[in-house]
Every structure is written in structure tokens, then in C-alpha cells.
Image 1 (cartoon, rainbow, N blue to C red):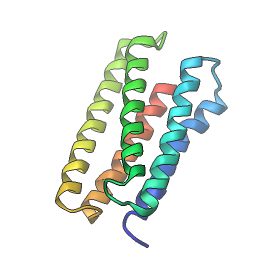
Image 2: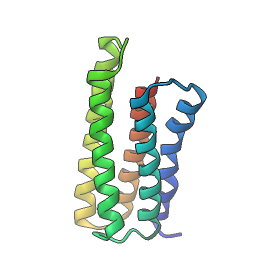
Image 3: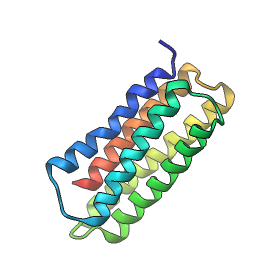
Image 4: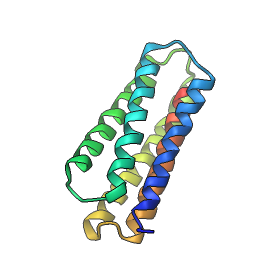
Length: 139
């Protein structure tokens, strides 16, 4: 198995918050939109990492989708989510700092050596951190 196939597998982590949301359905239109974005991220990430070709069209689409989704999730949680104590918002900010740090480290690893073992491991942990952050937002 190629190293990048681990990232296809870690992309399945994006389904965990989707399943959680479906089981605990909340008729909130913005959260439904976020679930749609997360589903798109799952699809684009899986398709991209299947081949893992750097700077391909699907790579660009995956990157754009991920960044757009990240901003939407963050803005929703900080400004729109109701009945959320400041403590929870602070914890999410810490989680988001970890997400951004892992993104940065993954980006640096990929620039040094695309699909290297270190890049794959860090990016897989990045996927895990996204799962944790999005699950936390849906709670």
C-alpha cells in the first residue's frame, strides 16, 4: 500500500461527526450546511489521496474546500452557535490552534518531501484533529 493510502483511510474520520449529527439531528439549517461541507471534504479528500498527485485539479479543489469549511465551522461556532458557554468556546479555540499547527507542520513536511512518512503521519493526525473539532462543534 502506498503511503498516501493511509490518508484515504484517515479521510473516513470525517464521517464520524456526520454520523453523530444524523443520530442527534438538530433542525438547524446552518449545521445542515456544515454537514454538507464535511461530506464534500470527505469526498474530495478521499479522491485526492487515492492518487495524491501534488497540485492536481482535485488537490486544488480539496484544499479550497477544506479551507472554506474550516472558516465556516469556526465562524459558526464562535458567532452563531447558541447556548454555548465561554469555556466550550475557549476549548474549541485551543483545538483549532492544534488544527492550524498540524496544518502548518503538514504543509512544511510536504514541501520538504511530498508523501514522506512524516508528512503522511502528520496529515493523518491533522485529519483526526479535524474530526475532534467538528464533533465538538456539533455537540
